[in-house]
Image (cartoon, rainbow, N blue to C red; front, side, top):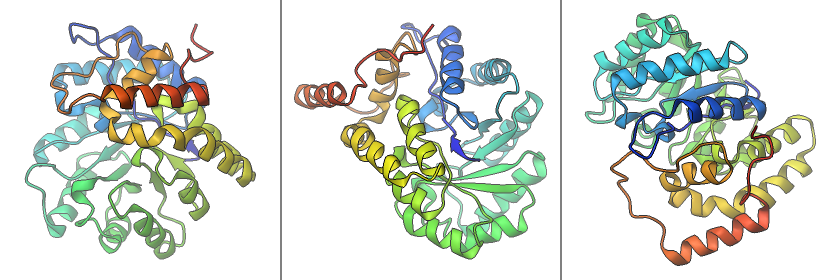
Length: 300
């Protein structure tokens, strides 16, 4: 993949029902921002707060709205292996093109268990697998194990790097695979410009400002490193510190103020305290300075 691979949030109404109109608008927003692929059921999607019937409906809606224009990848994160396998089979049946899988997040397996988990996923469906190297799995999914998975498990094709050591791990994976094991950037866009310089070409970041993140990647892949760096340091980094501290609150908040979704509400419970008044004031000041405190210009 070359470009942005946004993981969408789940759009809801004020009473916390699925907002299918906003969800479709989110898909169109991603397509108009030249997404290379579109995904759902990552952390940004609040996957752990979505019922199985809602999950099925969201996959149906997203696949339908994308209409085959780009690949659709579906997260299968679950606390139990058999649940993840069922989600993978469901994703295949409903028309997804890839699955994204992090390790079970309650009883986290050891390295042998991790290998068995991805092997079972590969046996359950022939969809390509994106390994999601999330924070809780970073110490288990070291570069050696990831390379073994890539070499020995048939459908493991990509890894999304976002654990605490993702820069060093990315460099090791690129070196050990001679660039053949594609690493997808994550971590909200932290170190995006550096990962581009290392050879990463696709990113699951920045859905709140997909046009800006995408501009960084396009400029770099077009050979203009200076332009990419200028956009990154001038448009992305100024708000990223606040965003990484309050991403649950700010992802939907920014999409709402940009006119992409109709409700900024997080699916309850929120889990974290909201921004303080002073932080919110400074965040608004930053958005005004970089031009992100206004409607996205392509909203119909």
